[in-house]
Image 1 (cartoon, rainbow over the protein chains, first blue to last red):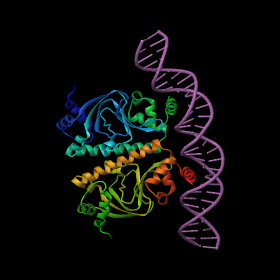
Image 2 (cartoon, rainbow over the protein chains, first blue to last red; image 1 turned 90 degrees about the vertical axis):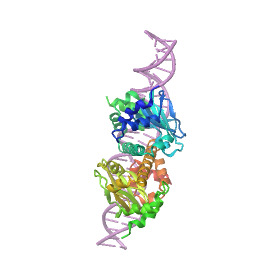
Image 3 (cartoon, each protein chain N blue to C red; image 1 turned 60 degrees about the vertical axis):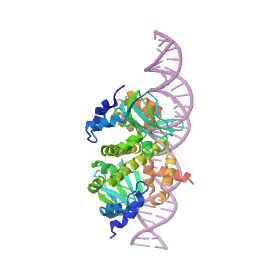
Image 4 (cartoon, protein in one colour; image 1 turned 135 degrees about the vertical axis):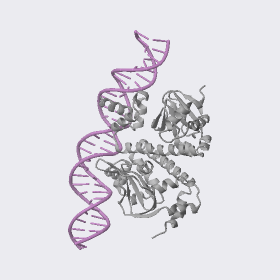
Length: 194
Length: 194
DNA sequence: TGCCCGCGTTACCCTATGGTAAAATCAGCG
DNA sequence: CGCTGATTTTACCATAGGGTAACGCGGGCA
């Protein structure tokens, strides 16, 4: 069993671009976390439940999904060193229709919401929480801009730029649902790309 | 000229649903603001500039727009007692392609970004800033969900529910661009609605 | 009162994407 | 190495929404 505190450098390097906290702070943070593993396609947080954890991906990937008619559409992807809770439900502590699913075999660090709330009352934790909120907003607004102003084809190109190699890690029907199209349409787009 | 501090009760009542601050705090807040007016269709913040103010709408409305090919598409509306800056640019203090426009003759309260940053280092200000970020995220995610999972027709119905009477205040081509369709398509949808 | 001008509407055809179904390819496993 | 089931591709037609253009209507203004 890995000591979670040994993962502190990883946390520090992931968040250093946003704000500076000494390694000791990240060790304390990691000490409040649990080290968990998920199998590909395993449901981390089912729909219509309350999110109980703040998750950080050590290695692997996850998707945030929403049921629509006959299948799940993907609202967002998260990869190594990213945050991947159902943030909506984490914030409100209400059930949400969103479901979080591991998209590869993954290792994560997770902190129970009670400790997340406690920690985000301390000074560094406030910054962490604000950074999480503001950067989540920025990326959501970016996604909205793309949905409103780009074609499916352009959105696919942007996705590939944003996450190079994503098409080797994530199945096509997930990518398609994220783009707001069917797998068949995505296949057509990929064909045109060659 | 209205004393901005006389608007403190309005601020307090607008934010009370999110967190509780005594009236005195809002008076102090308002004292840092300027009372400004805009005419219908007046540009409050042009595209490709940096947002210099935190805006609060006393009365009226505004839209956040993005240039696409031959016209502006609307990313969001804000009405009385809502916040209406180019939040992306306010946060990053970088230029952004977003443009903020008054959609009716409007009165607003605005606080320069330097004071906004100063105030959001104090305790109540931190809460304000976090609330702004988290609620902006929630509403953006909701918009993304609607774009991905609803038809233009359904999105129009949702918009009417969310802002009752909006179709009497905002022109159809703005509504259409917000929904991601053309004014002609919106006209078709409205016809079907009768 | 009558004339414009802007906005919304209608009409027409076009294109991107959806839906269904079948074929092709790939991947894991005996 | 070949079977089997899953994933991806292709094909075919259907539909929502786009583009252009013409029309109509209502309000401001001469």
